[in-house]
Amino acid sequence: MPQVLEFKLPDLGEGLTEAEIVRWLVEVGDVVAIDQPVVEVETAKAMVEVPCPYGGVVTARFGEEGSELPVGAPLLTVAVGSGGGADEAAGSGSGGVGSGAGEVESSGNVLVGYGTGAPVARRRRVRPTALTAAAPARVPVAAVPDPASGPAVAPVQAPAPAAAPVSAAPAASAPVSVPGAAPDAVLGPVAVVSPLVRKLARQHGVDLRQLVGSGPDGLILRADVESAIRALEEGAGVASLTAVPRPEAVTEAASGAVARQSAHRIPLRGVRGAVADKLARSRREIPDATCWVDADATELMAARAAMNSTGGPAAGPKVSVLALLARICTAALARFPELNSTVDLEAREIVRLPEVHLGFAAQTERGLVVPVVRDAQARNAESIGAEIARLTEAARAGRLTPAELTGGTFTLNNYGVFGVDGSTPIINHPEAAMLGVGRIVPKPWVHQGELAVRQVVQLSLTFDHRVCDGGTAGGFLRYIADCVEQPAVLLRTL
Image (cartoon, rainbow, N blue to C red; front, side, top):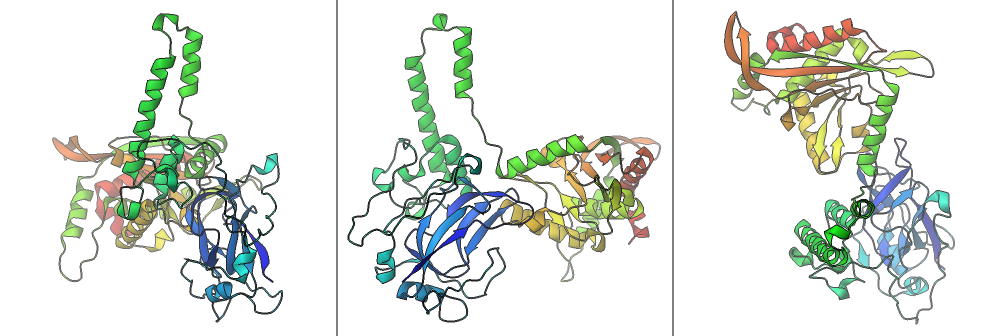
């Protein structure tokens, strides 16, 4: 007889306590293999695929796409045991469903990158067998409430008789009617690949199950969702015109109530919520101060152009301005190690860190993230640039792991890409300092006693006043400016 096992949302590490379901990778009735990814979730750090440690047939899923689950809440149930469908999916090699009565094998772990190493079987629909006949033909996805308000999930439903007709799961809320909707598509899978498209639909109350995609094989694209949003807004505008009385009859209180009801609310969760919490904590705990200086970056830009003009087979990838500034930061931190530290409040100690794990701010569609270049003090400008390029590409694709987003000791923030000259950045808690770099633009500048047009940049340093005084912070920033104005200064530390 098959045994139904419950797979719960695992601890994803880095102190994360919850995750948002972005996309289910399996349906009820699918056969899954050991360590096969079954759901894609978004944490405050990154998006990850969660593999299931059991092999068998999916009998129930818990949590709708877009809902948040706490760590330890059930994700799905899997029927395992002797049965053709499950045994084929699990494989006959290492790892799989045990053939003996009551024997169940699993990988034991549930984090990405671990496991048995067995090849993952492709997801497919299982044909009716003794195993699938014992499982419900279609189990509705159960919404998981907040842990503080009650139980996380309802008990697993008892298997339905094999001859019982399949009934559609009740909708969690009334669907939104939009032009181009496909009523018959409500029961089928949603043809959406991009998590961003799903998020956009959730924010504007668009029911993806009623849309007909314009992409290949009916894939729902962002343009389809935006078109549905415009249709909804136009419909809401018509409704409001018919409901609102004449302007002279509208009182001030009524106007305020309408404004409050029409306000657009955005949940502070996921990446945005994590950023909000960290910035608030930084302002709350760190007594920060900021100093800044203008620097002539003409020679730095000329040095970069010379580096990138070298041709031939030995020429490596082009060096970016950010990579050069990162290399200058590591040299400055070697001279002023006070700024590569953190404060242990419980022990009342300043902890100076031996390695420089350099974070850099990267703007993505999911929000602001800070990938970390590990051991930057041991890298040259070319190596740092290559790692920055790799991490930036992964950030934009949403493939950064929690380990690549944590553990930084100093942050470099190039806000000049937004076309601004200066800023007072908030320290990335629990670090002790952040260097901000504005745009590099032609400005009048006194050079060698004469007025000239030079490439000028504003540099700002926000630092934790507990780890050092203004003299150290000023010395650090002045050294950065000297290296920008005269890149040959770096030769002393190369």
